[in-house]
Image 1 (cartoon, rainbow, N blue to C red):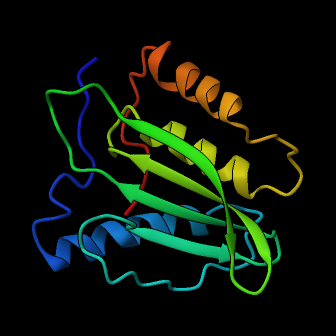
Image 2 (image 1 turned 135 degrees about the vertical axis):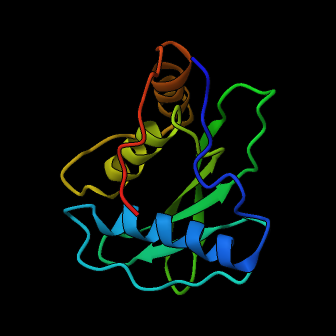
Length: 149
């Protein structure tokens, strides 16, 4: 399957970067179990992170690092959990992704699983490796662009 980029030129201009940030805000705000997504404008324009939000009601946060598109490499999706702290400790899901038609659905699924308080997944290194292996590497991900802007 040939991968197709989504937001390929997000590093070219501030306008494109803001559009890519908005993509992540919309994606996460559509999660049915998230009460609200506050505008968390990130001032870094290198994609690291392109999106960050802390969800105090869940005791979790998300940091998304969007990688530039490279047609010569296979689809990229990596994820890990770090301990973060402001005035209390919480878990932070860090996602590193080259946003393409092959990674869009798996990254959306991973985010929604992380934010759903009813799902009791153990987001261990082994779980994340198996999830990525199953969702990206082992499957012919002939995904379309099933998202809205």
